Image 1 (spheres, helix red, strand yellow):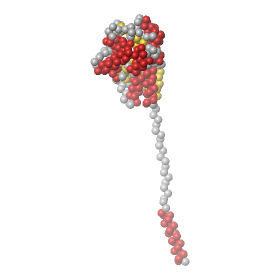
Image 2 (cartoon, rainbow, N blue to C red):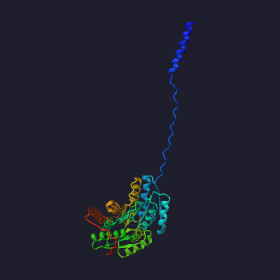
Image 3 (cartoon, rainbow, N blue to C red):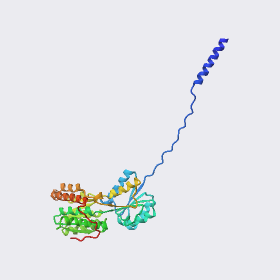
Length: 358
């Protein structure tokens, strides 16, 4: 009996030891609930055109720059055409009311409306392309404006024209009369005079960047007078100049875009203007939170605001062997002049009065 009691007590003791060594049940961890990161709305940028898109010129260049902003920075972008001077202020104010972070306005006619709306919306940023706002002591903190000085580039274009002209009569057609455009006319004339004293230069002003029919009429009259090389700076109106040159078999150089396809036998080059790069730079400033409000920039040949695309000139010579030698001379001269302008050996003044034809 005693042995049986000892055996039972031993079993109880062993069981107690086993259960005592068993791991204690751990509390079930509670999953930590985290809130998803807040979605940051993309910045909104609008380009308001004082001229129409589809011009194969400055507006299309700016539109391409804006599209690149959307790709590179994830911006929400919009393009609108402002139909008339009477609509500028209303359209700019409308975009400000819609909450756009950056409003890009274009060309001198939009200057006053841009300043007016910028004052009403001090927290909205504005890029005023080809405008004169933060000058002569003025500094508006939410506007960055830029002007384009093309006198150096047009000096080179005038020189090129003299090498290609057989009649020694060349001309330039501008879309409108502005201080910068007048300086370009003077630059072109100086390029002609310095490199071909016996050549005659003339100019004409369409009075619109959206009137190809009038530009064509002007170009035909110039060609009738003996002009055989025409340089344009007329945006959409240049299409009429190209058409006139094609009908008469003369040479033409355009502005901003390569329109060789319109007239392969006579469209020999163009002046490049970095309007698209200007739009892109404004977006980049916004993306980097480094907006230079209150500052005024000048775009010219020395900072790639303007450029002469030599490859287009070379391609024209290949496609039109009759101009092989004269184009080779023109390119060599243009490159030499570019170097001398960059070094300061040649100076082209910013003269804003209209030149006298010679």
